[in-house]
Structures are given as C-alpha cells and as structure tokens.
Length: 350
Image 1: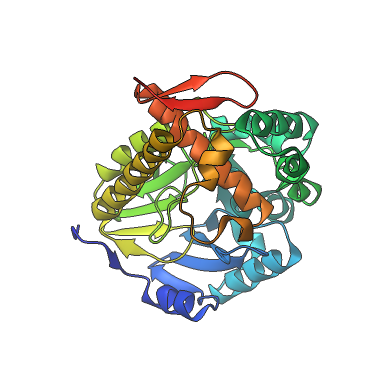
Image 2: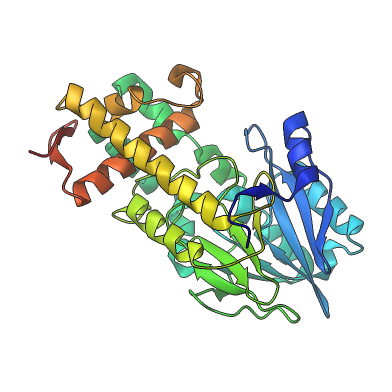
C-alpha cells in the first residue's frame, strides 16, 4: 500500500473540481460506482457501490429519498447493464438519509434484503418516525450548550424535515463487527467504526485489497463527529479508536461514499488524527483566554470553513455538536472541567 495519500478516482476528482457530477464508473471487474445526488448539500452526491453477484447485484448504500436520487440510481444501474429489479441486497454503512434513505424503496421494488449495524438500527424509529422526543432532547441539549433562545427552534428542528419524506425501512439483517457478508463472489467483512454514527460500518476485502469506507474516512474533509442524544457518551473518542482500527488494514484503494477514491489510507488517517489534535488544542486555547465559556460561545470562537453566520442551520447544529464532542473528549482526558448549569460552562482543568 502506498504510504502517501494519492487520488485514484481521477475522473471523480476532475468532476469535483469542475463542480459537476462524476460519471458512473467500473472501478474493478464486477464493481461499479454510481453518483446519486443529495439535494442542497455541499457534498453534492453519495457514491452507491454496485457489486455484481451470480444472481443479481448488491448495493452498498442507497441514496437520499428523493425522486431525483431514485432516477439517478436507476439510470446508473442501467448503465452497469442491470436494473433495480436485479438488486438482491442493500448493505447500508450507516443510518444517515443520504445512505439509508432509498433502502426501503429499493426493497419494495426488488425484494432485496437490507442490512444495517444494530447500533444504528435501534435509532431509526426515533430519528425518522416518532421524532417529537428527539426534537425535545436536542432542544434541551442546545439550551445547555448556550444556544440563544431565538435560535433554539431553528437548530432543534434542523434536518427534521427529512422525516416527512423517509419511509423507515427496518433492516432485515443486523450486521455485526467482523461479520462476513453473504455476497457470493466477494469476501467483504464488516468493520464496525463508530463515531460518525454509533453503528457506522466499513467493508473490507482482504482478497481484493479494498476498503469501502462510507463516511468514516473521506479524502478531503473530516466527517462530522457530533455529541448528541443519539450518540455514544464519547463519540470522538470512539471515532479515533475506529481510525486506529482501519489504519491496521492494508487496502490498495479506499472507496469512500463521498468525493473521490484514493490510496494511502494510513497517511489519510494520520491527517485526520492530526486535525482533531489541532481542534482540541484550539479549544483549549479559547478556554485559556476565556474560562467559563459555554459550548456555543466556544463554537463561535473556532475557525470554520466559512464565516459561521453564513452556515445554514443544520451546519451550525453540526458545528455545535462537533465542539461538544471535542469538549467531552477533553473531559475524559482530564484536560477540561465542566460546571453544571444552564448553560454549562467549561474551564481548563487545574
């Protein structure tokens, strides 16, 4: 495996640079990537991977639950020489709607089984159907974070509109860590990589030397790791442990769910770990200058990809959750103390 990060999905990268959707590609014999659009999102599309089987095909992820995404998925399958009726399995890397959203519709059309890790499966009902409790929990979390009263409704309800468009597809198969998937002709094993979501999985083929990394390792950006009511107690700690887990693998190529394919997994993992180390240091610097600061005010004091006020509500919500995940990790490491109250206030540990 090359030690240095290298873009291998050159057509994807060229399309990304030109701000257009990349082509359907035959990545390896029997393995295709189909870009499926995500509405109003800077990530633009999710790469749905198609694995040819002896009796049809399997999908890894499915796409956002819109008609445009459905049409793109069908058109992509036609370009591979098949159709939606050929789908026998949908392996979903995690529960977010750009990955899980069309799984139910694919199953209804083709009779395919749908697989998901149990840690994400148990969250589906509260996240996409009976959402009142989740909205209330998020509102309470934002209140404790110090979000101003006038912003609470917007942040608490951000991303909830998707619930009205998503038919919750309870999985047929719960996929456990290190489980070999029943995909004839392939030797992919599930690698449980919590962090971005509690039940996120990657797929690794030792024979093909491939890692389908979902959102766990992306080539250009760092996936959002947020603390919230549907997360583990220390999501960033879990994510860093999951990075170490995949770093021990030796794929020739990484196939992420967004952006473009690459090689040099260890190099990319090291860059992600370094990024979070820098962010932890930046938060400690803010607290050193302004002890007793709320999570929201710390968030406002950090550097982001664009001015914070220009970020849409769902991104501001994610930014607050990301800051809180870093604060929780610093608490676990004994670097930061929390003073309970409304809002909670944080200090450097003495």
